[in-house]
Length: 347
Image 1 (tube, one colour):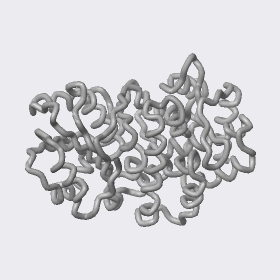
Image 2 (cartoon, one colour):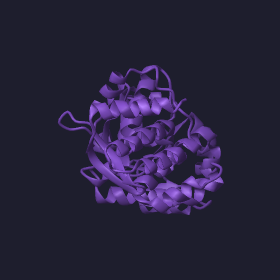
Image 3 (cartoon, helix red, strand yellow):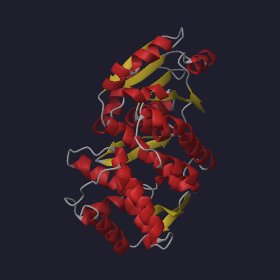
């Protein structure tokens, strides 16, 4: 369930009062500790004892080492199966916190209070938790639903522009795979700002939640949500392997451009439609230089994607604006052609 919070956080307080909880653990990073935690604590009304747990910010810390530290902390504070974890943060915090909670003592309850646009519209919704391992994105994880997601849009004011734009990529994706009107509304935004984006957050969350409810374990239609991510995650992983960080949204935007071109090469959409989509994505997102990476390295990571089966790369593509299709086979020659297409956009 997704709840938009008013300034008094009444929805959250009602939830805390209605649930029998032994202890609360609030997971933050140093940024949400400084900018978001004071707002939460000022409005949270509960007699349940709580502890604050802080981890370092950044995708590079979403790993098994951090998970072990968090399991040990929960154990030291004698968290029992009635404990509640509150994940206050962006995608790293909601992914990590959900994973740790879903595995500690075979699963304790957790809720998400996303603080970034990416987390509000995507990462905090749908019950996917995970950590990275050996530079592979979310290769270890669980399907575990949060008890609830509480969205406080004013947290967007704490974000810098790059983070805001990163979340916008997932909103564009939701429009491309499921709602042409949502796509049109978003591409007509003249300036990316929290005020301009806030009216469209709820629709993005509804699109994702609707898909997840139909296919929680990602057996069919939920695969559409991976549009842009097969290529995007591969590039993101290569950046991580080279001790560089590429914002997730920029990787997804790159992935959507390449996978839109693949949709054209697979004769799912016309060249005109593909160029319309690509030009609109490029209006908002910078070119990402991938020339330093060998094609075989990019392809190898795609083949290692957890969505693949029987040695085939399964792509989620589009057959029109607002229409996603999944389990699309793409030949290696078309993949290389699409990567070359993207590289040539720099000129």
